[in-house]
Image (tube, rainbow, N blue to C red):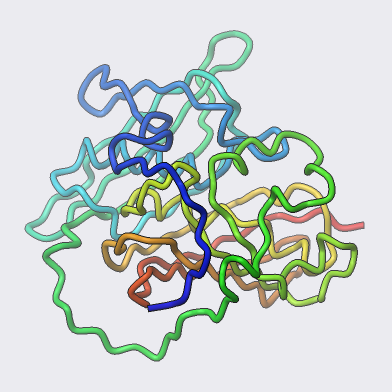
Length: 287
């Protein structure tokens, strides 16, 4: 088991009774139609975080499909979401004994009251507890210093420009080796590593893993770029149900070209298991 060292002494919320659960809760209007008020608490630089949005749609699909656990979720982000009312429309594409597949879209409203699609998802769900225990892998957990040797948003000399409300809802401790950008000396390597959890102490579950893969600062910062890095497409694979305790998240970028970069993320739990993986394509502002 990794050494988390001095993890913050948090008031422990529970799965189903935490801020994350309340802010991703939907009201079922009809089969396949859910209403939600997107919370301003999950914004960064005035945009709603893509991982939070993915968890919202993931919860809607869990209510629509016969299986409860996301196995693979692929999302295309079409327009930027804003805090406020939204509707999620989902439907069953196929059902089987071990997997079911569905699609969902989140809509908000323009000034004339017309629906505008923000994000579209295709996903397959199953039962993580029914998976076999056989694991054969060459993957290894990221090496991150103990928490008391890592740094969070509260340690920054100045607040991030624009809204960074999401930082108040996360327990995020970044590896100093990936923090050169914060002191004006980016390493040039597309790497970001951190201890991750929810600030109220709620343990991770499959839905919160959809948030975890997209909650760290962009690797573009450590390449020497600044500003918003909007996600174009994000695919997440949930591999097993995470054990209680803090997660470790590692994100790497190998190729920035034409104003786009990819980010590959791995999420490891307190029992050294790879619990989630993702890849996203994001747009960067050059010059």
